[in-house]
Length: 357
Image (cartoon, rainbow, N blue to C red; front, side, top):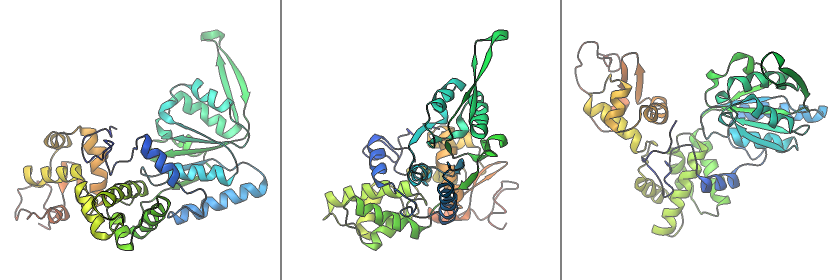
C-alpha cells in the first residue's frame, strides 16, 4: 500500500488523513501517547479485559499471555503494546512482519529476548511463512529449532527461550492463519472512536502541546477525524499552526473550520482524494456501477490507492457501495456533494435498489 501520494498533504508531504507518519510526526505522537491504561481514552471493553489479563499475570508473578490486537491504523495498537510493557514493568522490543523475511531473522530476535520481555510485532500478517511456523513453537513451548546445514546433513538444534509476551498487531486479521491466531491467549479488536471520545483525545493532546482550545473547537476537529485518534492529533497540530499564524493562537470552532478548509478536509472528514473518487463516480459515471480500474484512471491514482486508502472510509460512511458489478454511489453521496441523483436508471445498472426503484 502506497501512502506517498500527492493528495491532501501538509508541509511534510504527508496526507493529513493518512495513517503513516514521518519522523517528526512519530516523535510528536510518541510524546502524546498515554503511558498506562488509566490515561488511555476509549476502547472501554478492550481496556477492561486487558486490565484483568495484566493484573492476573502480575498477581501470579508470571509473564502475561500473548496478545493479538486487530483494527484499522491509528486506533492505538502500538500504544497499547507499550502500555502492556509498562504495566508489566518489562522492556519492550519492537519490530514488524515485513522486517522478518527469514526464519533466521526471527530466531535472532527471539534468542536475544530477556525473561518477561514484551515483543511487539506490528503487521504480523505480513511475516514470511517460514518465520511464522517458527513462531508457533516459540509462542507455545518457548523453544525454537535452529536448522544448521543443508540437505541430508542438516541438523535441528533446539534453543530454549525465556518466557516472553508476544503482542501482535494487524490491520488484516483475516489474513492470519488459524494456527497462529489460536496461540494468542487474548485477542481484541479495536473499534473506531465516537466523536465524544475523540474530543477527549483532542483536549488531552492540546494540553500536552500547550495549545488553548475551546470545547467547540475540539468538537470541530473531532468530527473530521474519521474516528481515529492519530488523525485527530494530526489535524490538531495543523489547526494549531493556522491559529498561531492567522489568529491569536486560540482554537475556536471558526478557526478550526477555517484551518481545515485550507487543508481540504471537509465537515465529514473527506479529503481531496475521497471527493475526487465520489465526483468521478457521480459526474463521469452517473453513480455507477463502475470498475475499480476505470475509477482509478479517472481520478489519476493507482488502483491500490483508491481501494485501500479512499474506499474503506467511503464505504464506512455509507457514501459508496461495493457490488459484484462495480462501485456504486449511495443516495448519501449525491446529497453530500449537493448533486441531484438521476430519476431513472437503466436496467440492471446496480443503483435501482439503492434509490428504491
